[in-house]
Image 1 (cartoon, helix red, strand yellow):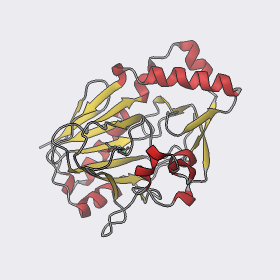
Image 2 (cartoon, protein in one colour):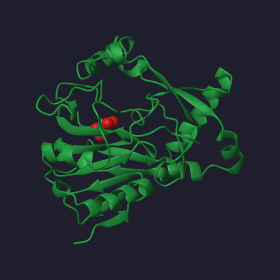
Image 3 (spheres, protein in one colour):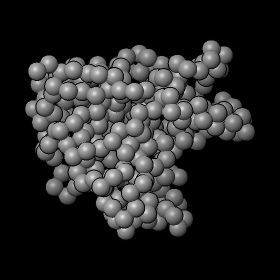
Image 4 (spheres, rainbow, N blue to C red):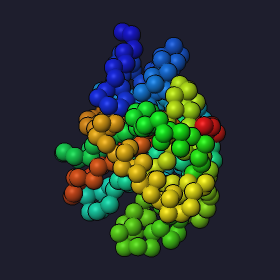
Length: 279
Ligand code: SIN
């Protein structure tokens, strides 16, 4: 059966005709192109084993062992994204793109559903290609040439976990000493696979726009965040047993909904290394 890629509403695409446990070389190229074009790929009914999850990620680049997430003891390449029934906070509730705090940000992640709540726990994805395309020409002109500083300190660093609402999360992260770096990236990037332009700032990790005074930077970022959160650019992915999502950080934001109180949700995430970004 050939691989079929069907665009989803607003962001991403659903892929059928592929067994991720046994990805063929010819299919890797199709998925890579589709990822560059759509920003996130959704798969159903996969029964992907942990060993094949690692093998699958290896088809797209080197695995980045996330320094903050707790890994599986048998498979250190796999990070756990976990919320237990007695925990209030989940991981990834604020809109973000992973690893923008690295100077060479990760390409993306492959997330596999392992234990899902009875209902809820969907993930929202937003297309930063579409968000950029929808800006008016004068805003595009203003943004091209600007750069922004991103950091992990306020999210994964020691101080980040001092507040009471964040303490519940700190047990699920480690290595807070490693949260020291800043990174600078263009506000508008050219996607390394598709060359499409995409907005590359996000509410979780972007600190400020470097070329603007603080108040103007804050106002511009708020305006962009408001624009990017329009439903018009979003797809809501409803996880089922066997679901897998493969997103590209250079083309999308994501947000994990925290609407399943008292229930467990466990996902396995492998992150793939990327490359430097340019405008
Ligand atoms: C993440 O932000 O990496 C996790 C997304 C999710 O759990 O749906």
